[in-house]
Image 1: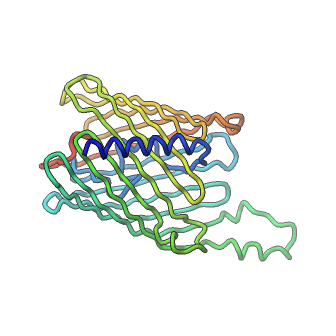
Image 2: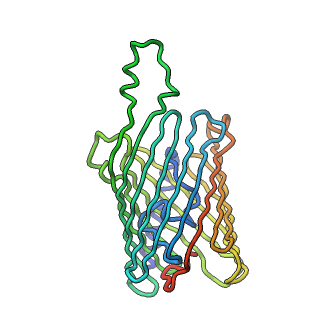
Image 3: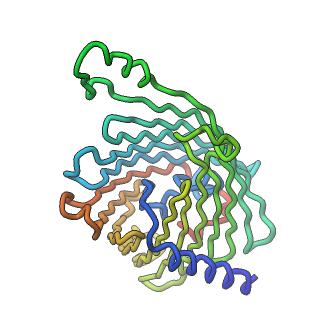
Length: 304
């Protein structure tokens, strides 16, 4: 098992090095406290119910830059090792708006005390629309342009798996899998994401966390390295997270998060060092997560 983990970590490291010219695709930075935003197989079995809302403003002050809003809720049914989830994502970019509504199911398979394999899937309704109030035409003869800007609906699905072994978490998710077999669907490309996280667990006040991920969206590739320190004076105290991000291409950032009992507040700021930085004040993201009813039998409490 250790050799497999080393090989996996080495492979993802090579992907980071080889994909330095990748393009950016919006997703949440604060995945440490909400893996469900990345992967339907990410089960929060520390709490029976959890609700998350988040917003992300990409490249503040850049005209037409994306604004992303995310809301999700999960319910863990301990007797059946099952998680049910619902998440809604909407992204406004220029005069377009994309909405994605997902219903998710996940199952946790316990191999032994140290090894858990989570499997998840989602079915999604997707909508793509134009804000026609932002478009003007020179004369009435071009009014037919509006007819081509009607909203479009589609249905899709995602599959994911997550393996937890002691302090290591490996996950893979294939999003929009129907699009992989429909070359005419250019609105929602098949997307693949792999990640490997390590979070130290000890009685120390400070514990280290390291994450590496590789992301493929159509013909674009992106990779990320994320390092964090988690401060916790004792088992009853609130946890404080401070971290740094490097994401291709040329994007750096910082993460901060703190627990207030069952409420966790996370904030991140990332800055593009490319040509965008001449017209932008950086990207800001804030996330609120509230957890209900602690679990009786938590299999992955080392992650929380």
